[in-house]
Length: 559
Image (cartoon, rainbow, N blue to C red):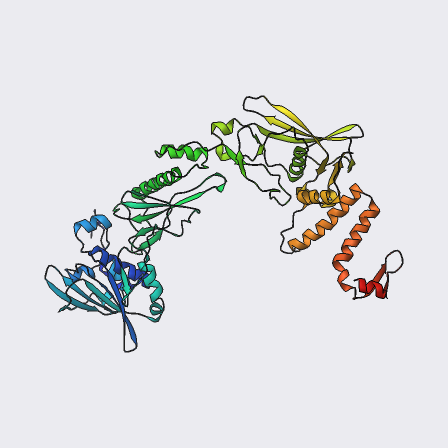
């Protein structure tokens, strides 16, 4: 025997003996296949009925389409039997009936060519045996009816499966004579474009995962990677959904039909979808596209105006990496770009700016995506912020790369914030702002609030509450470890320590100790004091002594 010099692709007859392992879908998969056959057969509606016989539940799916001329086409794997127009438009695979492989199925259909009805019964074993199946005439006058037994799992899933199969199906569906709800696949779209034989719906408000259904094939919905876009600052989010009209270039992976085949047709659809997104954006009054996306829109033939010169008003960062104030969009013309400073620099700078009304330049947050727009590139920006501390006649400069203190907390002769400002024309300058406080603190070094170095000028009018609030904004960051105390507990403990530190800086050590003891007693011991009595606790070098006395009647009544 000589070695063959040529070979050809073919399907082994033995494959039919494994057909039940190739097709093992859900009831929804079966309904989807039967619904598609009815639609291709020019049906105007589909009727589903259940019949109970001898303890069994049978499901009948009937359509009023043209019917099936040749019964053999229905059970020949890979042979669809559809005419050339349908084959070109939808690429039917001739596999739909095999979604019922291994089940007892009765089929009744009208044959237009022979002008007669026919029926056949396929037993569970017939699917793999290739044994002849009898075809008989029957009294059906149009369309096709397919009946099969519902197993317990399918019977339980019947209502949901019918609802899911009919939801975005283009024909009306009835279950036991009751209409099943349907909805337009693109009902919530903000904008719809028709291109490449598809309706492209553009949705705003969220971006859709590639794992959720994005394409509707006449009722069969499948996931697919499709374009999405997020405008700068998450001002708007855009995604698309596709409703197929007539798109032979788009194909599903067989036999499951649950994912798209990657081909040039799908790539062209993605490009058309991106164009549709840009057109939807163009219908709005303004946008926040990055400069890169703005150029992409032009490449897609959509001319959009440049983004308006508006940026978020700068707000200082806290130790928990949140903004101290509410941010809002403001006119960025003539504004100063301000980077994300460390919390101690940001908070102290914000206070210094507030104390210098002559510095009226608005501060705005940078938006890197806007780089490339002429108005954005023309904005001056703070490249560096420093604090100059003069104490006992000596200067100490703190910058954000190394602000660990080399001097102790206390009063300073003067404090000045230095803003190094760069401009596009290289006319760089330094703006000096008088400040009344600077706090040196580095959370990256596992500092606690008592490690903060606090410098105040003689003119500083902060009270204990003000300084406590500032320390909280700069230094508090709750530990997120699983074994850490709750946020509230950590916060309460921090405020107690911060308030004591504030009192020590602004008042004296005795007042700080009294205040701290009062806070501890009020929080943890006050609830122990019985009504009408008083508790006196003596703490010192000797053992603790506690006395309980009754309040005078006059004081009890006063309470």
